Length: 221
Image 1 (tube, rainbow, N blue to C red):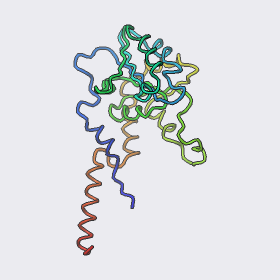
Image 2: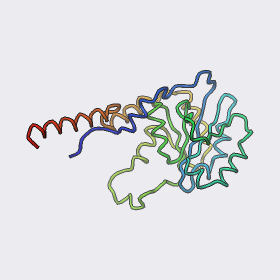
Image 3: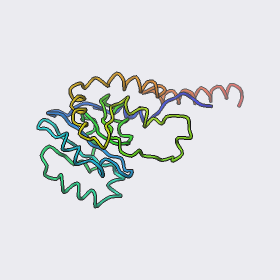
Image 4: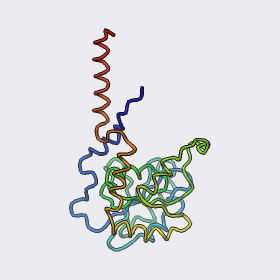
């Protein structure tokens, strides 16, 4: 029997203290660039171009690699750290034992990483997606008559730009920063449409289990 309970991990994210709040004393805008770890991700294809078109005196750019990317590509990470170690306005976030500054970011930039949905649902802020080659776990996905959420959600929680025309990232992010609430209602509606009982999944599941046990006891089971 399928019980319409919900997604407890999402509820944990929604309950986190201080989610989506800017840090005390935080000035300017914060843009986080976070990659996935598949082949041709944004760190390997267009990181330098992104930093170039997004840099501005009133912005902080946080480069946060996927932990698996760090583990699998030590030489590439060392090169990135060397390039950006002393660049004003750019911060490398590689200590995964500390909380991420994602919640205090105004815009997220990624490729096909699921971090976009965590960011969207926690902060109600938009993501800029770079259309790198798609991350494919099931090479036969086209045989299933369902559009994957990684495709259908992209332009619901943000906007996409072609990797070949990365200059478009500049005005796209500027527009997001200028209109921070434009995506909030859309993201909230998407969350409610895609998940049962946001914020109450464990409660609903627990009630079902208890009521089932009580009913079984009454039947003498």
